[in-house]
Length: 260
Image (spheres, one colour):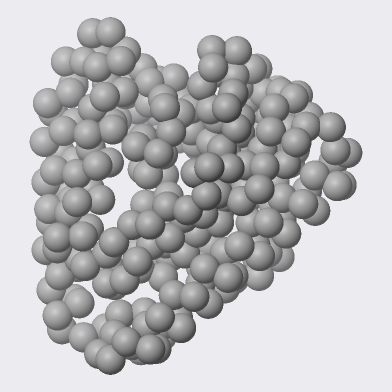
């Protein structure tokens, strides 16, 4: 998956990026009036946006989506703690879960219209430079979300990481442990391989299959050390397995080495 991309891959990536930004702009304009309407209209728009982006990925970039382990999701409210390798990881939740509250950086709220939409859909914004007070505010917002029966989505490392990057390059942050301790609900670790196909800081989109897999939930009640060890092992172990699986599939498919 380190082979240089061919011209076909580059052209498909260029076409997808053009379609992605055009579709996103159309949806933002179309749903701007929903800021003055009931919240569920905007939530439906987010779901529509994501489903069409996934369709564009398949039709233009040759990227399919596979979700595994949905049967592991708890029946009640929970926290999904996901690996973060790509922009795709932030949008998939609008179709995967019912009205999720995604933990995101506060700076995003400053983006015109988009930031207002994040507020309207009641995402959880965190001031990453805010220290303990920001952590308390995040926990308070998450309590409200869980009390309303909605799931919380958090990226424990707080940033996108490259496939295969060691955890030391982006350590797991204390926010996920604070939520686990305060909310008393299961945490579902989520592994994925999206960075192999929709890489961070790159316009390239390589054909293949993005796989996202829910791991076995971590029940409430563990101490911080035990929880963080279980979370890290399940996310990192699952992610490494999915990455290896994708590389093996690319190597076994004639003409596909450059796609990985």
